[in-house]
Image 1 (cartoon, helix red, strand yellow):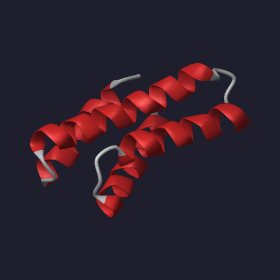
Image 2: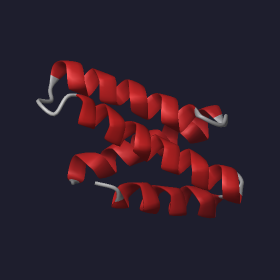
Image 3: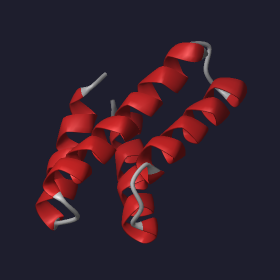
Length: 82
């Protein structure tokens, strides 16, 4: 659970830095691929779960706009998925 929350913070920082739609999804998918190749025995489920985290964060930011509350809610919602 702790790794998942740290992963969401990484996605948020990346999204704040690049300010484009889809950055969180792309970053999460690449992170999931790297984790699946190097560390995890779960393989494809790690990639899908990471992509879902990024997609949820992007979706909340898209709906609410690029305000602070969108990032807070996006992180909270994405971290609930496990």
